[in-house]
Image 1: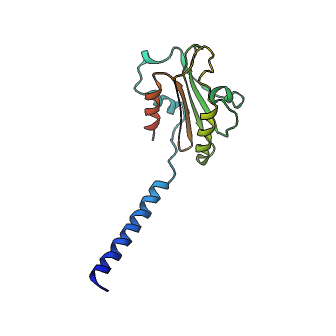
Image 2: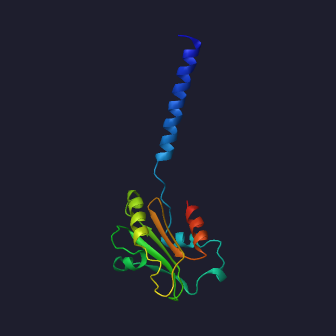
Image 3: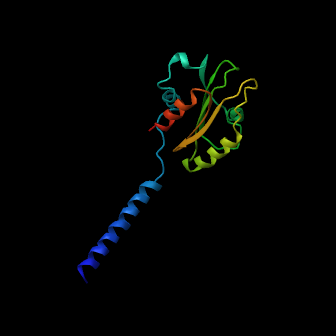
Length: 159
């Protein structure tokens, strides 16, 4: 074998190894976000001043029979849910966190919530932004106006 052939074989082997390692990291499942939904919700609001928050903002644990009001469907399977909304009905702001039974369901749940969420659920007001994302076994639905980009940024930064 010539020196060029040996070098070519080494280069091919290294390329195959690099692709295999890259595929492993690219296809490895996203880690779940640790902590209670209350703690995670607090992290979503980090960096938002109290004067920017909707009036009477509070967290509500969502019962299974009430989930359709918050996400537009009851056709998703999940462990627990928490919503952060204003106590004043004329403010279009809702952030829902769902902890799924299995992170493998995240893509399907995101799709279902995207097609079902109602940004006019308050009747007299409408949220300008509707964002649905997942991270591991956590799904977030953000329906809000000017706070949506910061909430989304904070969700994307969760570890």
